[in-house]
Length: 120
Picture 1 (cartoon, rainbow, N blue to C red):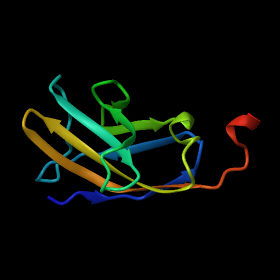
Picture 2 (picture 1 turned 90 degrees about the horizontal axis):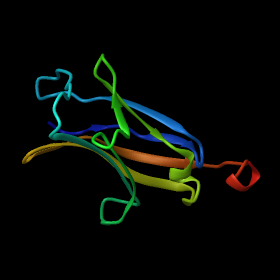
Picture 3 (picture 1 turned 180 degrees about the horizontal axis):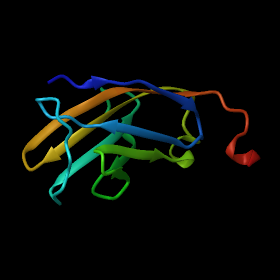
Picture 4 (picture 1 turned 45 degrees about the horizontal axis):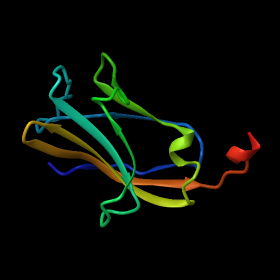
């Protein structure tokens, strides 16, 4: 199954809540109820670099799951306020033992802001 493509756009330095569903090969919701499965939300400048700009993990309680199977994470203002305006790549990957599957792939575009951290 190919990853779902989702592009995100918001002002640099803002808080952004990102909600997503994970589905299995039969398009059924994935509900994680064990301690071995991990979900990673990883942001990089592009797919050709190994340098991670920031990352959120389900196992660290940075990605939450509600009772309906919706996963969400909060991209905090501090995650992006020092980054340059522009477009970055990200993916959402699920890992359980030796099983690894990229579920979502896309871009995050950080747009113009006028109230910078120094002005707050």
